[in-house]
Length: 385
Image (tube, rainbow, N blue to C red; front, side):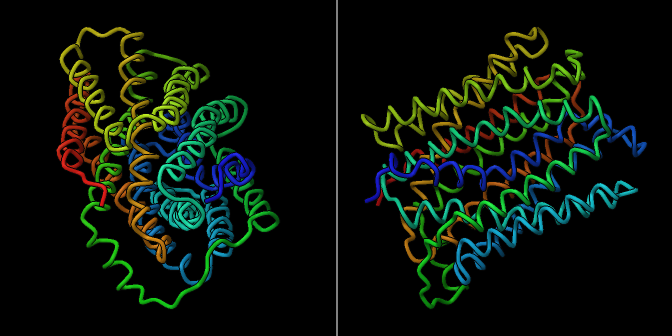
């Protein structure tokens, strides 16, 4: 078994690969009000592009997992990054909300090709608690993306139009493609397999399915808060777009610290115990958020949101490792199924929440409390093999 201490650069490169989604989403969030004004539509239609992105990202992972297990992790990553960069460029040229929706979907589709490979490479190389640690370490590095991305987005729209955000995304993908071409060694060993059978094997594994669903629901609650962050901070508390990254980034500072705690706790507790405890804390934070919705000032809101979101530090890496552990020969397909569950649920659930007329924080609190409660119900009887 390879030790993580010898793979620092690999961890950084995989974190960059798996950061396609947070970079693409979080650089974009501060510009949502500006885009709505530019296209002369209400803000909900621009917020909907976040859900459209997740749908495209999910579908891209279905195809990306298959391609990854056929031609290898390296080639499929490069294809995905070049496609992502191309459609990021086309978004710059969009002249209507409908073009924005279509190009955003296609941008996300190729982004899905990229992210499945990061997870599959970890499964190719690491197992058990070591895999959980690697996923957590990747999460630590990747957390720089949602910390830096809103600041980058705010900086760009302070001096330029929102279209320059997508110029940045185009350049980011091309640089990453060059890094993969130059430095990423192929970890996949081809074995002949029926793709449909591979998907059946993954979907029929009951314990892996529970871990996948728990991860998907955890991400759904997480993404509901990301989707409503501009509403919470900019619309409700009147935080300026220049200061928004500091309030948004606070959540990820706490998240990074909790990732380090998770790595430490894995020495003494099994992954499933850690996951259950984290979800219970999420439920408690969400209930408090809902009950006191009408009386919360800025600081308590920040603390409750950061508490809820930071628990994903204990859910993501551990659920990912539990799910991927079962699949050695079809890690690409397994990674794509996890991605479809994760981003598909995130898209559907966040879309439903966005459709609810929201004037207070209560609907948000109730929504994330219900999501976490279902996740706990699914994972509570998990048995590792």
